[in-house]
Structures are given as structure tokens and as C-alpha cells.
Image (cartoon, rainbow over all chains, first blue to last red; front, side):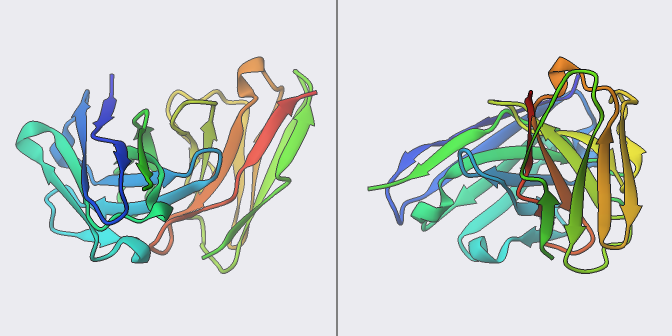
Amino acid sequence: EVQLVESGGGLVQPGRSLRLSCAASGFIFEDFAMHWVRQVPGKGLEWVSEISWNSGTIVYLDSVKGRFTISRDNAKNSLYLQMNNLRPEDTAFYYCVKDIGAGSIRGFDYWGQGTLVTVSS
Amino acid sequence: IQMTQSPSSLSASVGESVTITCRASQNIHNYLNWYQQRPGKGPSLLIYAASRLQSGVPSRFSGSGSGTDFTLTISGLQPEDFATYYCQQSYITPDTFGQGTKLEIK
């Protein structure tokens, strides 16, 4: 059974940093691209970042570029999101998401339960 | 790319069939996915590549369309289908989602 378990969320002041982690199990982690997607409570979904299976390709949403860094450790089956210079508009649930891995077709076939990041003074 | 879903909310009864539409602001070919999200949970993938049923998803869910106009149809609603549904384009980064359609019990 595929499981994605996020951790590291919490309340943080504007301008501070937070590091999210995602522990993956139930699939061959090193074979798949991974993503972070966020959702403001009660609102819609927003893709944040993607990292390819070997970390060779990394892409960010424009509004987080230069502030967020995605990384992975295939030996530990783990995905990370380092978030620096946080802003109130970054407040959201952050989901760790597995790519479907169907060649050129992108899709998010497994999602974690989400971890809440609240940026407020 | 902007994704626009309609309606934003929908009321229906168990056993009915419903259709949700999603329109892209430009041609996305068949790079369109559908997700279901129940309260307090992460989304789950229903349909990918516009019409391919994700493994384990009941066959009452179907998707169609290409280019800019897409539909998700649920034939014979079950109690567990009352949730919020999102479309997502994966043709151009950043992937973008529709605003969601909340399906409620009538």
C-alpha cells in the first residue's frame, strides 16, 4: 500500500523558515517524480514544485522561486521542501504527491494527508 | 493556463447521473486529469489523460473531451461520491487546477 506521510508543518512568523518532510513507502520511490501541492484551507489546489526521479529536473511555481527548495533522498525514501522567507500567502496545507509516472502523461496518483503551514505574526 | 469548472456546486440524489465540465483557456490536447476530494482528506486521482480510468476507480466515473473542453460524468451516484471534484491541466508547467465543483446530496 502506497503511503505518503508529511511532517514539519506549524505556525511560523513571516520571514522565517520551515522544512517539510515526506516519508514514502509502498512503491519504488526512486522510480518516480514527486511533487508538492498546496491548498489554502477551504480553497482550491495549487501546484508548488516538482522534482524528477534523480533530482535532475526541478521546477517551481513562480511565486515560490528563490524562496523554496525541493529535494529528495532516494536512499531514505524521503521528499523535502525547504521554505525560506515565508509570507502570509504561503499559509496552506502542503501535500506530498507522487507522479503517476506514465511517460509524458502527468498526473498525481497518490497524495499524503497534508501538513498545515501557518504564516502569521 | 486557466481552468474553469462549472458548475461550482451541484445538488443531486443517489442514483442520479451528473456531469461536470472543465474548460481550458488554451488547447491542452488530452492533458487533463480529474480528482475527487473528500472533507479532511487529500485528493484522489479518478481520470487521467482526459479519459483513462485510474486503477481501482469505479467504472461509474468517466471522462471525455480534448482541446479545451472536457467533462466528468458520474453515472449512478453513490453516497461516497458526494465530495469536491477538481480538474487539472498537465500540458504546461505550472500545472493548474479548476476552482472545484462541490457535489452535495439533494
